[in-house]
Length: 96
Image (cartoon, helix red, strand yellow):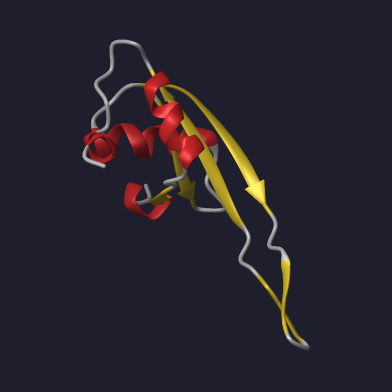
């Protein structure tokens, strides 16, 4: 079994993701090869909560320019995790 900290890379802290915390929805950047079941198990193990559902989104990197040089931003996978009603909140986000 893989380490749960290898699946959950970092939390997404945006205005929209912070507003969704009232509905017990938390957003994370996850490993690109992780599936919904692995994300659910990793969040439950790391934060000791009960997960109701997981939605994942794949983002492709965008092409960006700096003068005449052209580069590409990194592609990543994002997961929106909804907790059950009886589950406690994730303390990491409540401190922000």
